[in-house]
Amino acid sequence: MRIALDSMGSDGAPAIEIAGAVQALEEGSGDLTILLVGNREEIEVGLSGLATPSRGRLEIVHAPDRILPGESPAQAVRRRPDSSIVTGIRLLKDGLADAFVSAGSTGAVMAASLILLRPLPGVVRPAIGTLLPTSKRPTLMLDSGANVDSKPQHLLQFAHLGTIYAQDLMGLEHPRVGLLNIGEEPGKGDELALEAHELLKGSGLNFIGNVEGRDIIRGACDVLVCDGFVGNVLLKFYESVAEFTIGLLTREMEKVGTKMDLGEVFRVLDYAEYGGAPLLGVNGVSIVCHGQSPPKAIRNAIALAQQAVQSRMVEHIARELAEDHRGSLGEA
Image: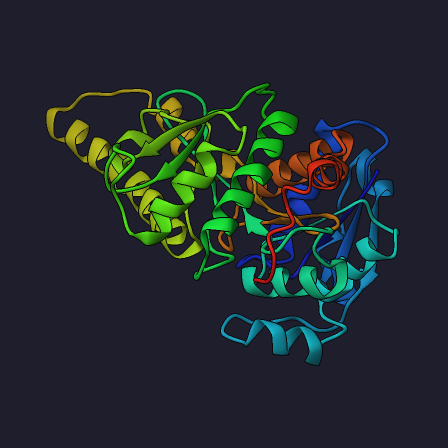
């Protein structure tokens, strides 16, 4: 298997990506090769002196340009064809890589994936699926930022995409689907929520109804459906709460002179544990990571990409949509 890794994407590139790639190779199967996509000179400097048996499974694909934060994603993809993001996704499109991973601009990864890979037949709005920690197992939330203006039919499709992800990558045969809303009752919410509730109720999915914000962390559902505007706000709040909680516990323990192993708390709340978020609904495995990702997050994102390829998740989505036309939702 060959994974294309955008080596110029994270805040600490390319050192972070190289370290994460080495970890992935050392802990993964022997058939994995990682393509380090980016400025050859910078990557070679990062690889210099690297003494590891895995060095032979790291290949450099030169991409001299880089899409910077703040650039218009669609314009940057067209204006910077030699950027690490566009080059990496082109490798995937051309069959020279099996998956793509990047901690670069989320918007640019989305734009390049839509332009080069194209949505799968029947998919109107691809969505970003992000795992949120809960008191039970993680909950997959989508959309977490790809679509800020969604229609009820789009939320229905997000539910189908999330269900397939949960089946293939989380091992859940009948994942519970919840609709994020301001109340549990079917009649609560705005027009989008009301119409989406009716569609989900008749979808044949394991729809459990509306889920309030306070119930997410209790593990009320396995797949949480919402529009990308709300999802992105919730995601950023989740990240801030994790940092706040760790800081609060640390300060309080220092006050009373108590020592406690916070390793498990860190592990549960740390986004690095989940690696990255896949763009679901495009014709290829495209994984987006946090810009501040440490090597562990890159390693786990690569592992997630491997799992998605091995489970043939993209083919599963395409097959499901083709079989019963659940994705044929009309114009976006």
